Length: 230
Image (cartoon, rainbow, N blue to C red):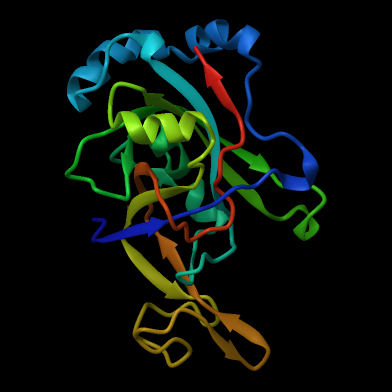
């Protein structure tokens, strides 16, 4: 059962100069229908206290995680763990972000400012021997909630984001031992050079929870550079 909360704030990235997860505005209505956002919006908006009017939303695509690379907090998620089965949600671990809330600064008890209509896992080709993958979320932000922040997001003045999730356990990247069971990473240390290898913590049993608008991200990969109006 997940027992620890991870908040890993990313920042802006357009890998190798290629556009990220974008939808042409001319195709936006069709894309939203295909995603089924209109079908779920009423109930989801009621649950999260958001607008039920789809015209109150704009979309932005945000890469939130790169597989197998630790963030500034010294925590990484492997491709194996991102694609592990989450029994509670009935999907692959990374797919668990679909349908979750968009929040502010990881305040899980505070108001939501949007929803996550879709999520994708894409291979990062031409970098890291093509062994790295990234999780990209499509966020629908409600203009009627936290209106000042929404304006800054829509104008791209504020474009840094961070994923939040629960994890069941951590293990050492060097020896695979559970947290606090080895000497490679003393408590309170995020990274450590061990004989030419970087020690960090791998997170397991990932339970996706939200994506937040933040001021100071922990990953360098989650800033949105494309805003789409429905």
